[in-house]
Image 1 (tube, rainbow over the protein chains, first blue to last red):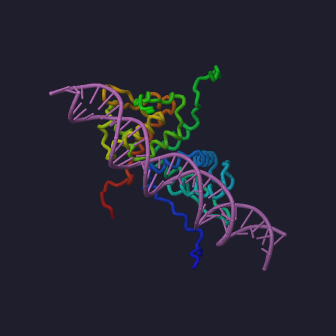
Image 2: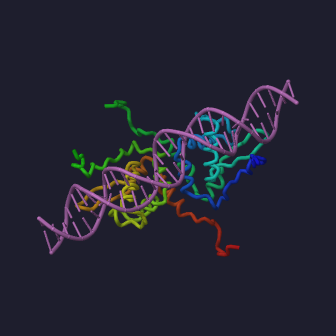
Image 3: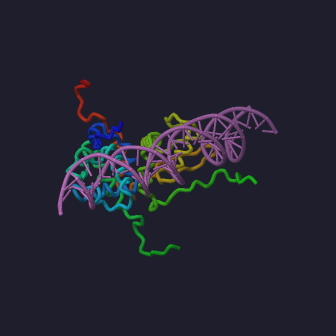
Length: 120
Length: 120
DNA sequence: ACACATGTACGATGGATGTCGAAAGAGAGG
DNA sequence: CCTCTCTTTCGACATCCATCGTACATGTGT
């Protein structure tokens, strides 16, 4: 018997107090997920299919689950679309300054001073 | 022919400008490595075998390599011992405030407000 | 009702990862 | 020289992980 009667499995999110730092770090250590989080940081809410990533839809779903279960994003359903938001307040309440510091670090240039441009 | 003539393979460390944030986050997302970094944050330098971790020596070596190649630690040899230090200046120069923020976040209690002590 | 769009679930797959035990190199000390 | 300690390398192994294709569930619009 197909237990597919409830495909949208109620989207379990961890409580704010239950967010684990190591899970957060692991979630952020993937380039695709980092792109998702950075995009979300710039825009408040976004539909799943509108992220500037270059992976298959099913892969995107996987990354969303990792981010969701780590407590980084929240997803809500609206009709056929699934909207995603960053859990900014929860994150910042639990780990003050962490997200901004990490995102700022990601923007840090690889070459702080490199006017020569020579690969040598 | 045994290529074991040079067991101490010169301990390659990345340059400060080449430290990759995603590698750093991944390195920190392991509990054993997080313990190593936290211990190093409290003490300036430590020998390999003196970390409060509960893994086999070979596993410890593996974690040290991950941390070293991510640019988090620096290792130098002194006789038979290998001393390990955190690359605080390099890290903070490249990603200002990152390490302290992450370590502070790790100290964050799971229950933000709980002076009552009741699990209720 | 039908087709289409959006997104998920499932299964497979190749690669990375954490873990260990056994063997060995390098230095210190007898 | 021999032994002991510290640490590494190697090989093995089980697990996790990112990725994809295919099939399907749900909603929208005609």
